[in-house]
Image (cartoon, rainbow, N blue to C red; front, side):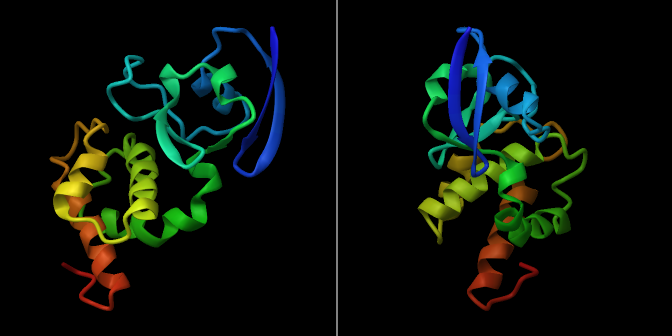
Length: 157
C-alpha cells in the first residue's frame, strides 16, 4: 500500500492505495459518483475527470500518478456546469443521462481552453465520449446555443 495525497474538488485527500489502484476507484471511494465505469478500455469517456485542468480517463490512470495533483469531477464543477447543461437538455441530448458527466467534463475543458470553438472543435473534444442514445448532434446544438446566449444572440439556435 502507498499513501497518496491529492486535491479532489478543491480539498486535500489522503488515502492508502494499492500500487495498481485506478483513479476511478479512488474518486468514487471519496464520494464522486458522477465518475462512471463504462467500457473499462478507455474508449467511452464515462470516467472523464480533469487532472490539473486537462480531461483524462480515470479508468486508465493509476491513482499514484495523480499524487500531488488536482483532480476535479462533476461534483466539484456544479456551478460551472450549471450554466450550459440546460441547453443540452433542451436539445433532447440527455436521454438516459449515463454519458452526460463525461460530456460535461469535456465541454468545461473545451470552453476553458477555447471560449469560442467551431463546430469541428466541439466535435473533436466530444469525440471520446460514447453515447448510445443520441447522434451527438443534440450535444453540439446545445453547446452552440449556450455559446450564442453568452454572446447575446439567440439561445434557441
